[in-house]
Length: 78
Figure 1 (tube, rainbow, N blue to C red):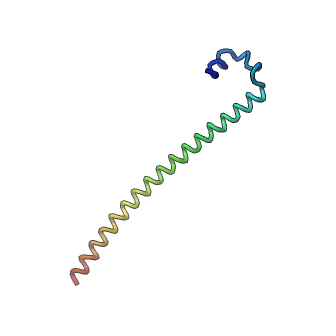
Figure 2: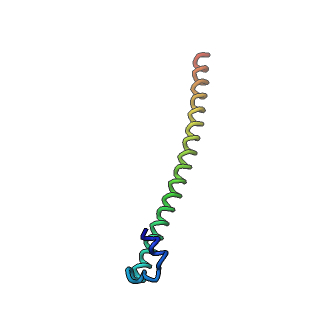
Figure 3: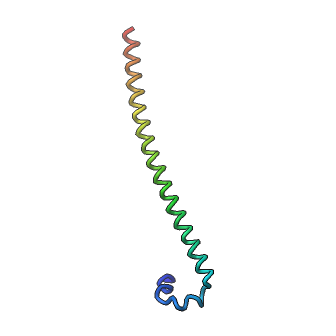
């Protein structure tokens, strides 16, 4: 509602907020948006790395199971 009032009648804006205040608000909002974007990209990167690590662990577990089975076979043969 406030945003629509600002956009519809910007000529009265200086009556409520100074130019410095507006610039400060724009900088703060831009910083917050950039921070949210940065956090989003980092979370996405961490999720991807976590998924890759889970796949590698799964492959290592499969290899470990195969090696243990072969070891058991070798022990039985002796």
